[in-house]
Image 1 (cartoon, rainbow, N blue to C red):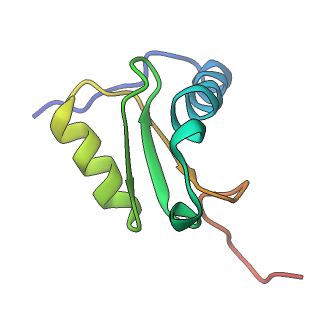
Image 2: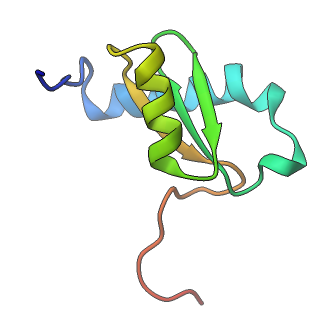
Length: 86
């Protein structure tokens, strides 16, 4: 199986990912989704939500193997945090 490569530079990828989250996902988010991961195809707007980031990503790629996946954590500016918290 060949590895899918990004079709956009980092800045464009991030812009499209943030735009897709705002336009396609946010209208469907509820309080029970806080802290869950959202895997979004930045080209189609398709997405999967799961408590596990890999499960969300795998479910999206299972539906669309060509998906350009952007990962977001609901209610957070960060998907992962490293180090201590203040």
